[in-house]
Image 1 (tube, rainbow, N blue to C red):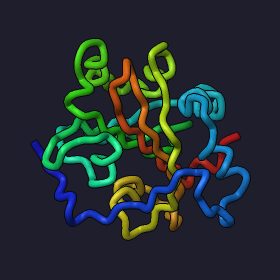
Image 2: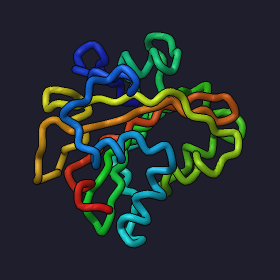
Image 3: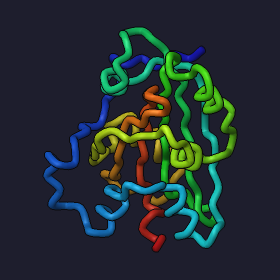
Image 4: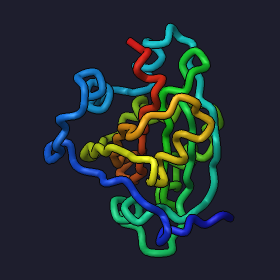
Amino acid sequence: MSKLPSHSVIEANWKPYARLNHPGLSSRQLSWLLDASSLTQRLVSGCDGQFRVEVLSEQWIKPMISERKLLDMKHGMLARVRHVRLLCNERPCVFARTVIPYSTLRGSVRRLTLLGSRSLGAVLFADPTMRRGELEIAAIGKSEFLYNQAMKGIRQKTDPICGRRSVFYLSDKPLLVNEIFLPGIELLK
């Protein structure tokens, strides 16, 4: 088991959209950030069906401090953390970090540990018990942990990159989804 040293990680400054000062965001960026529908479905339609999920890692680690607080987890508790890239026409468009507390992975929700290269979004939006918490947005700079995770192997670097996150609930059990938009997203419809 790998453990993330949360005390040494620089986190993004997440803000609820309603309180976000966003003068530097284009209407195109805002349309991706604020879209409440399935990001997977939008990507699939935007890349003519040439969509796939690339799993980068999936392990039991300590969440970052802000993630732990959002999920109401006690200090030291581990969560199932999954890093993936969503690709359109083999171009990375989104980096996603999903944090699932151990207590969430009971009953039918345990299926989330068996996703493999399937999209989490497809599972979430197909579940009739799903509800979504408040949307938070951040400009993520190169000194921050999520920037470095998202931009690994990406040639075209921009700083900052935009991200959003929200807690989803399946059968009232929480999980956190962070979606970081990579430079390739600009080429989609």
